[in-house]
Amino acid sequence: MPAYNAAQTLEATYERIPEGCCDAIVLVDDRSRDETPDIAERLNLTTIRHRHNRGYGGNQKSCYTKALEMGADIVVMVHPDNQYDPAIIPDLVAPIADGRADAVLASRFLGNPLAGGMPLYKYVFNRCLTFVENVILGQRFTEYHTGYRAFSREALLAINFEANSEDFVFDNEMLVQLVLAKQRFEEVPVRTHYATDSSSVGFWTSTRYGLGCLRVMLESVLERSGIAHFKRYPKQPPREDPRMPQRPPAEESVSKPEATGS
Image (cartoon, rainbow, N blue to C red; front, side, top):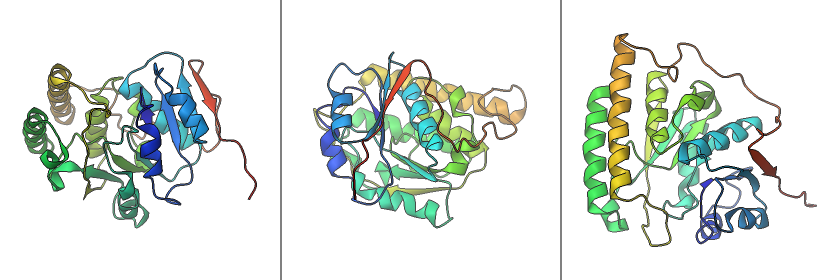
């Protein structure tokens, strides 16, 4: 869970996670100004506190790095803002566990996101960007901009996600990395709930994000054509497999759940 000021929704999101569907829950708090990390620790989650706000992309980097260090075979990323339905985590995991996919996206557009409260301008932006990206990358995704995803361990190790942006464009860069690394994808439908207590980006932030996505598409064209090379698209798998937990970077502190007797 990449978290920032999620105190109002974190517990409700946690309670909707199906019992027994995961072995551990990691929350990375990006220097929230509310009680998010305290609530996470009360819920007995493995909690990482950034000492400085890194942004949405930087938050996810810490999430995936910690999950790999803990030995996760499948990693699910869900926002703690209660916008996406945690009840479908088993649906996200199944294609990976069955060996059919390396990454699974929870798509709002396999349903009706407008019925879930998605603002009309976001609906239009999403549809237009997805069309352009499908044409450029030769894919058939129903959307590229979902924040609810599952990855195999091998998929995360096959890409250099640390080289990506620290902001919201991280999600798009990561998908392009996986496409260029020839990972297998599936999509599953998800219902969303847009509410006043759910975190959301505004119009101008969405516009900057859209321009950032177009920049990523241009980079992918230059990379595939050989005109230019970007460090986020290495020719060989960039990461070793960290099976043993490592000491956190200096800017992070980690709180682990207390052991309980069975």
